[in-house]
Image (tube, rainbow, N blue to C red):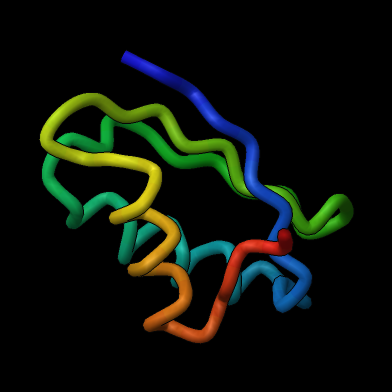
Length: 68
């Protein structure tokens, strides 16, 4: 299992964090998601079949792309 912190500049409120959590938790292999509006960061704990590439792709699809 791996945990990654992601910077997501489009986070502006708790609704954004809630949306991200709901969407990522639907991805098979994602175990937990926590978000912080103040830092605009999301922490994702995951294992196979989830990959960081799949997580980043999903976030981009829902208009919360990860900062480079």
